[in-house]
Image: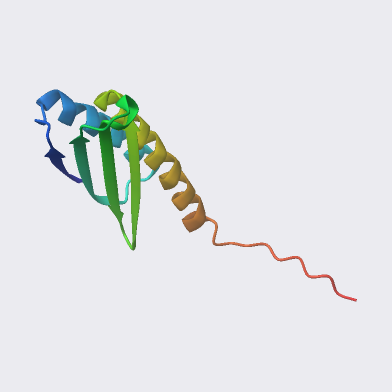
Length: 109
């Protein structure tokens, strides 16, 4: 999986990259068909402290893209939160793909 990290008003440190890669490794445990991942880390000068640090991640899957965004006062917490959101989306997507044997109960009169 290729990980591309863009940022605005923040320098991406090797620790941030390692933290994101570790989080995305959790997602790959659930679903290993992730082609690419794009992360966007933003630090803004918002009035509310909880909205200043933003993490956005887009996962490119075969035939689908998943997106999640999270705001927090700490950038590492925002990255953790966005990975958790994507993890839930990936599990739901995996269940939809694997649930192709629908049981249909027809009542015959």
